[in-house]
Every structure is written in C-alpha cells, then in structure tokens.
Image 1: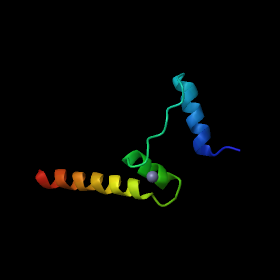
Image 2 (image 1 turned 135 degrees about the vertical axis):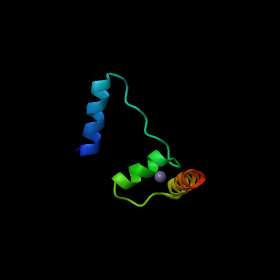
Image 3 (image 1 turned 180 degrees about the vertical axis):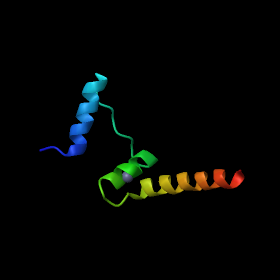
Image 4 (image 1 turned 90 degrees about the vertical axis):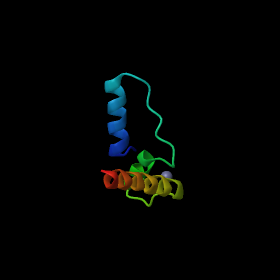
Length: 64
Ligand SMILES: [Zn+2]
C-alpha cells in the first residue's frame, strides 16, 4: 500500500537518480507544510516554527 505522496516522492527520487532525501525534521516550516498536506494538525514544534516564520514575513512587510 502506498499513498500518492509516497509514489510521487519515489518518482522524483528516480528522476533525480540519487538516494531518497530525508524529510525535514519537525520544528521547521517545511514540516509544518507536510502536516498541512497530510491534513493533520501540526505538532507544537511545527506550530512554533510557522508562527516565527509568519512573524518574520510580517516584520519584513512592515519595514518597507
Ligand atoms: Zn511537526
């Protein structure tokens, strides 16, 4: 049994010809997006990372 996400990851690995990439660890924006893609609630570490990211975006927008 494999999910579409797993199949497309395997496909990209084959296209690249390299070893599979290890997914980003929790506590990063990438991992937060992975939670979203899986339609699950992000864990605490990922929520914090995302909040921090949004705060930075906001600060950059304000500073211009
Ligand atoms: Zn997480």
